[in-house]
Image (cartoon, rainbow, N blue to C red; front, side):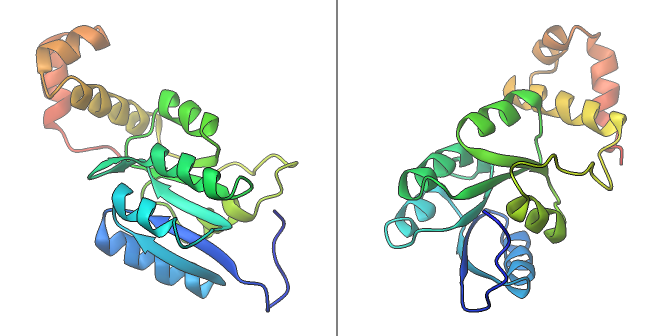
Amino acid sequence: MPEVDDASTVRRLFLVEDDGPLRMRLARALESRGFSVTQCDSVAAAMMALRSTTPDYAVVDLRLGDGNGLDVVRAVHDVRPEARVIILTGYGNIATAVTAVKYGAIDYLPKPADPDDIVNALLADPKKAPPPPENPMSADRVRWEHIQRVYELCGHNVSETARRLNMHRRTLQRILAKRSPR
């Protein structure tokens, strides 16, 4: 969907994020960029709101308190198949990015996402390749995110996480004890 220049056309955006301050900040930023924003803080609230609204765009957190944001992506596309949906996540990995695209997301952005990056992704020409990110995650940060995700999936069991990552348990403990890299 190309960028809308006509001031009379409303760009309806559906924002689903369980982090209240982040959701409010993003909503204000997106409204100032010409979107009419409907906010939801859970999968259940999003499903209820989709009964009365048909968004042109959606920005959905992958991990919500009461479920998976991919369910919201599917529901948005059930209501409006041509809607352009972006997934936001603090737990980025290749498997969930691929799944998000299969569910119909057009992009997958790590948190905290810059509002300009969100708008650029939503309004990007689907026929053109997107420009490279201005501030990509460092390799150390990507590694740390992956380790944190596997650790969480293993129920915070250090031994099981170390086995699955094929690393020594003590090495993993040292990594987990450090702050996240930038």
